[in-house]
Length: 138
Image (cartoon, rainbow, N blue to C red; front, top):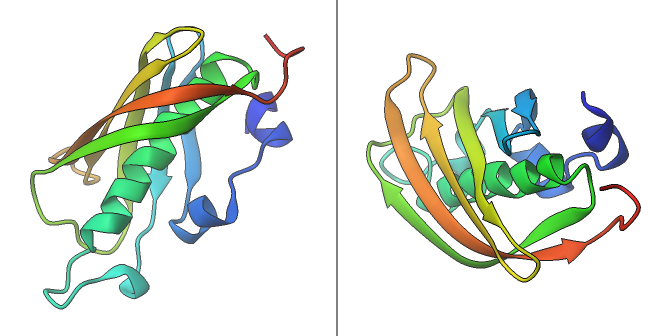
């Protein structure tokens, strides 16, 4: 785990989703997170309920900003737009989050969710407020 995520471990909501850091590229604001949605998260159709999918995408975008800023800023989501492409089954999935643009008052973020074989399941964009959490980090 990187120094940033040692200082700021995933919150309980991310742990519920099975949050696991796979890789990060702080220099360009990219991160890869694995999640493990389980039977507690399925809808009557037997697939993962959309709110959990949105949460996984959100839990990939925010940490991308945290990583890029070396822990100086967390993302406070102002809006979140999700496109559901394919049903998500319980089990391991991979989210790829990235910072598109980071300014003083707003950050633009995006993420995709993939099944292990690489098929796109969902994507999201977000506008977030960068909230200072460690002004000495960056």
